[in-house]
Image 1 (cartoon, one colour):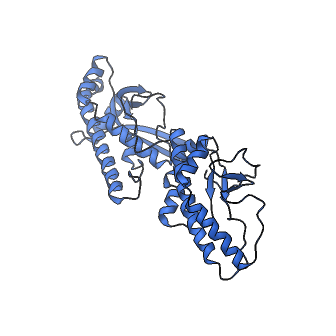
Image 2 (cartoon, rainbow, N blue to C red):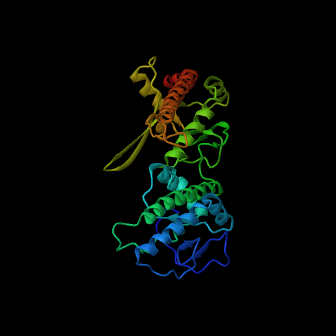
Image 3 (cartoon, one colour):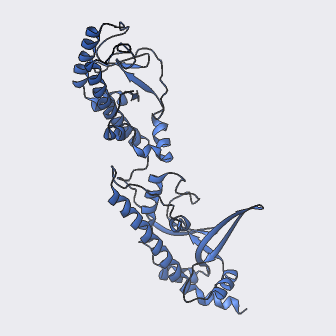
Length: 334
């Protein structure tokens, strides 16, 4: 769906809503072979007829008809598109690798030209006939509407991440090595938010915030102590040097604790990190538009959500550590 490779294949078995696929072209008026024209009058008449026929068609219905038959073609055209048509034709969300993989899994790259696109009857006619220009405008609209419909259906079928349909979330407090997972979903491994997928990262941020809203650091820390689970919460640092990759953990900074004591506490008690905390603190949560179209206000809302989530996780860490401090300080006296 995202490429420009034309598939040359035989005629689709039967006519479908008056459409025929022949040798990489979608025909809706004529039947190949189509005679090449050089006379300006016949060229003008041909493209005027193509325009009239194309305007009578419903690109959304045509795309759905093919999709439901399992023939998931996208259309390509050399016609110039407006900005809105470009957005429909190739939504920005397809640049998210997670979404594009989900779409292409169910809708492999199969593309067609529209009838008249590659006939080049007007190649040596100057100026270009007005009927050709009008047909190219009609092509741009039809193609963008068709591809918009196809993309929506492929995304739905492929279960791609969708900001308009974010799955519910249940909170947990599951320890896996030095990480504390707070979204109760398997597998409990990193990364849960794929790198480079801005929509996916934005959804992950929203779900992380919803999970944190269900948690209580004081109650959960006391329950951990009751199970004799003593550890601090903080941050993870990753350094890359000549000798390789070095990962370290340190407790959350707290104005009430001196630097010297924090270093001693880091040695006395294991330090763990809430999942996603380093991404949120590092601002890698996805700078995306949360609406279906460009909207600066929505982007700003997402930045604000990320900032609030960072503050919430920092507050949680400090509240947790205050409950754990007596037990960790006792270890320093041993």
